[in-house]
Length: 150
Image 1 (tube, rainbow, N blue to C red):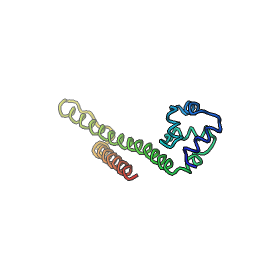
Image 2 (cartoon, rainbow, N blue to C red; image 1 turned 60 degrees about the vertical axis):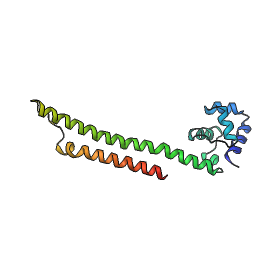
Image 3 (cartoon, rainbow, N blue to C red; image 1 turned 135 degrees about the vertical axis):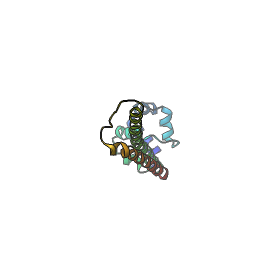
Image 4 (tube, one colour; image 1 turned 90 degrees about the vertical axis):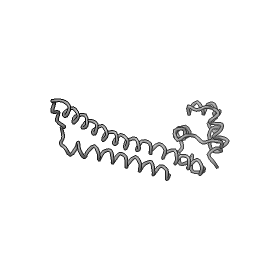
């Protein structure tokens, strides 16, 4: 039995209308209707709610429908990759901020009589910012390339 037929059967066993189910899932009745005729598939969040509502595992809901299983796999990849890419971009920006701070301190020291120290040693300020930026850029690009493959 495919997902559409299974959903319709489970809904009717509970005695719910499409409106009732839609209200419980926080979606429109039209969405439930499209799921039941196989025109569209629910999001991963809706699948989780469906498994809770019908007291069955997600595996039981998905196993019979190959297309829906593939959609869930793709959705989960889309959720994971942007988060990881975000952290690599934060790493890159951190390196850029370190570099800007160093340049600002050097500029102030050269243009004024002040002698502001760079706390933490030359290694952090000379090499650290570059390493953070390179690491962030390589990581972000790697995630992007992996996401293209999947």
